[in-house]
Length: 242
Image 1: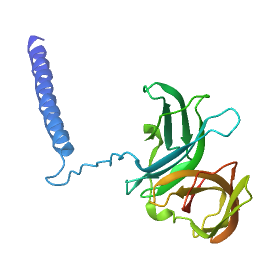
Image 2: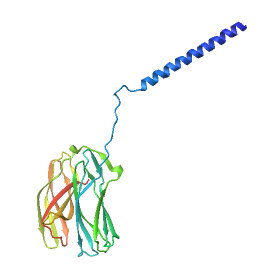
Image 3: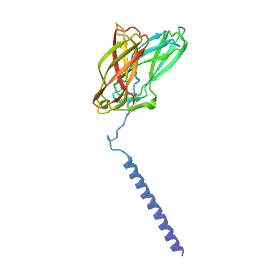
């Protein structure tokens, strides 16, 4: 009986040792498989977006409007990224008095900006009944609104036949918006920017063109009520809205 016991114990120990050896080989094989072959590993890097560039800005103080003064302004933004666009790019407009005190602030949010695209806007900001000494423009994009995009997917709109008419109280710029894309757009923002004799940006005004067909064109009109600051030339920009 004792002899049978020791034989059984010996077999148990042998199986245990053999099992440990087998487990060690298995672990070694698993570790080896997890190692990539030399030169096969690749590191994927994501391009960090560069900040939007404020290319130009200008403004004029409107004293004639009821409840003023108001600030009429214009700005031009450029996206320096070749493969990153953004939704809801915004320009913060800060109005200060002669002492540097903030007397008014406003934000203009655009719908989107494509890679390498240049967009513009002309609008109005409320100075809360006070006279601004300086007006600052600061563009920004929220981190969550940057998006990878292909610049080739969008072709810039073209403006044809831009002219101006002035009745004394209302000034209108009219023309034709040409869409070279295979995609139609429900609404496109059109901004007319004014420059002085030296080419400096003065102010701008914005309007909208609706139901813009693919590879087609639609007429548009941008209006300004009341007195318009003196200018020598004008130009127009268009950007998708909805």
